[in-house]
Image (cartoon, rainbow, N blue to C red; front, side, top):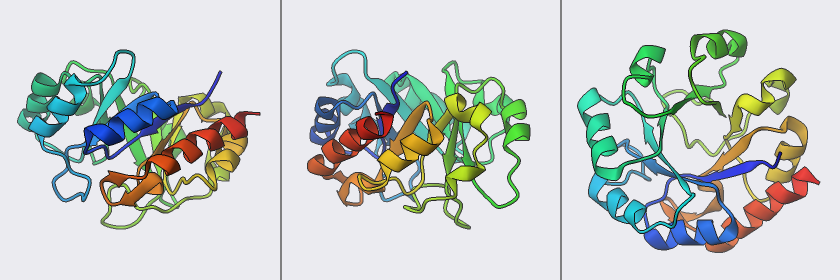
Amino acid sequence: MRTRVKICGITRLEDAMAAIEAGADALGFVFYPPSPRHVEVARATSIIRSLPPFITTVALFVNADREAIAEVVRETRIDLLQFHGNECPDSCAEHGRPWIKAVRMKDDVDLARIESDYADARALLLDAYRPGVPGGTGEAFDWERIPTRLAKRIVLAGGLTPDNVADAVRQVKPYAVDVSGGVEASKGIKDHQKIEQFIRGVQLGEQ
């Protein structure tokens, strides 16, 4: 099975289309106002309505209230929800959409327990840990911490770039990889050449 690719932090239609042209499977939209990649609901809706079929759209939240999530779901008709805060399993599941749970890889994280607690998640997204930063740190973590048996439930994130993604895919064999800062020209603005290089790196890692 090939490794799927999600390009996160989309704020412009031209970046979304470049990612799709390069072979991305999913696009992520950040609905977390403190993030430099935050996108307003109206802009995300406009981008999503312009996309071709068979591209998964993903909404990223950090401890958002129910009303804010409901607005995004209603207006954008987003495909998948991604939770990066302290959301409990029940709150993740109450929005009528499939969802994934992000895990910040602290030194003492118990992935087996988290997998059990969030059994209804479509996947666990593993990201680097930095205090006070819920995601998008641009930092990697030790991939050897990921149990082999969990690999196909994992979306690997955290510090991935065109330079290291082939090694990541080769070592972890995750279901998917997720990148944001590693393919940017500046925060929230994608570098189309880096996106192409990143996806070629994923393909190289599968060989």
